[in-house]
Length: 354
Image (tube, rainbow, N blue to C red):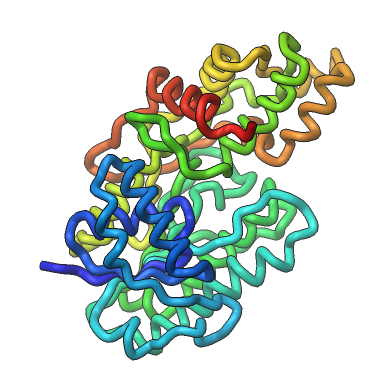
């Protein structure tokens, strides 16, 4: 049976891989994006290649323009919602930089509200709405496992950055919706997205790769330096390869009954110490995890201070230990040391700017 999917943010990292997987299994996809149809099809073809699949299905992809800031999204509703579908709201602004609060609210909160409103007004009976969120919407509340449950309101200062706050607000609005009351909407919270688990290939520069880009710049400019990075003693990351993540999202959408909130993360996490060891093996630098107390007792050198300043927006995630409640029956493959080595080595070889 051919299923119909409507996916916004179609030229993004997760959405393009999701679209490619769905097309490859024979489903029909309507891709929504601000980018041109040519750009979206090229991104989906690249994602299919990254997944080791035939790239030709990208040619039959239907692409329509999207305007998240408009209540009607600028869409031809009669076409987009002609039949029951799964609507994937993947589009988001991802930035940890300050002074972009208004943009984050416009895209991640108002934009999400507009997609939900359009879906509820126009989707045919039998449709489902899926918000792709982030497990890190938990903010600074990391005592014990974060439950797979709808969040409560917290002020912006309870989050590492305004991006997390904006994603929390989008979830809160969805939780109050008619679609949730009727059991036709859910949120899938992702971990830290990384490349393909078997090849290491990544089509993104966000998250871990932003940190790698900063460290690589200093490692190649001043090789052999030792740099302490502030870390929680048990700092860990929920790295989630794009191939296993997309497979789980597809299974989630196909299930007859699903929980309203699901953490799409690995059962096992990656210790930050292991991450640093692998980076040190591939770049001419020595990254060392250090507690805040150790740094207070022996302050940064000038070089360490500069590196930490440049990396601070992503390195803030090293300062916590995270646990996410997770109730799936089958755990995806863990990101092992060898998987981590593939991810880092591919990006150092192929992904870094010249």
